[in-house]
Amino acid sequence: MDHLNPNALKQALEKNAALLIDVREPGEFAREHIAGAQSLPLSAFDVSKLPRDRKIVLCCQSGARSTRALIQLQSAGFHDVAHLDGGLSAWKAARYTTSVDVTQPISIVRQVQIVAGAMALTGALLAWLVSPWFIALSGFVGAGLMFAGITDTCMMAMLLSKLPYNQPKATAPQTRLQS
Image (cartoon, rainbow, N blue to C red; front, side, top):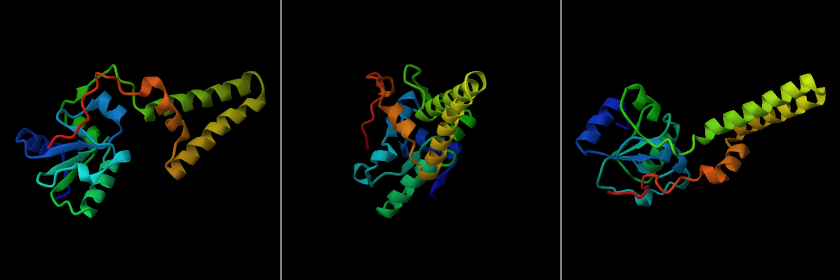
């Protein structure tokens, strides 16, 4: 079985019957994760870092990235692997707790939504109040969001992730894998 629901994962973790690997980016993991999870971001996913003698369960925010990591593990010959259906969102919907560090920055996706929304609103307001040419700002933001969706590459997210406040703080949980 390569899909686990939150209840099955909770039972496996309580019995120490699985190694939980969170494939979200370090900043996302530092902000919130399931207690006991280890961080191995999909962007740097290396199957050689994982033990073959233990059941591995992968998780992410919604299940999309953990599904991609699951395929990589299965292609590398791992057999006792699964992913959390619905990811961290499903875990929280099942009313299970997470480890949260509010001193860490909010997710890059939320930051992109805030910045893009602010830029689009600013462009619309300036076009209405100052000059119709400011509508170009809203159009630029819309084109950027379309490009990000089509190519799965968001330049704004890349730029925001480089900012100093988006670097995980020293108090973040260890991301070293333990078998």
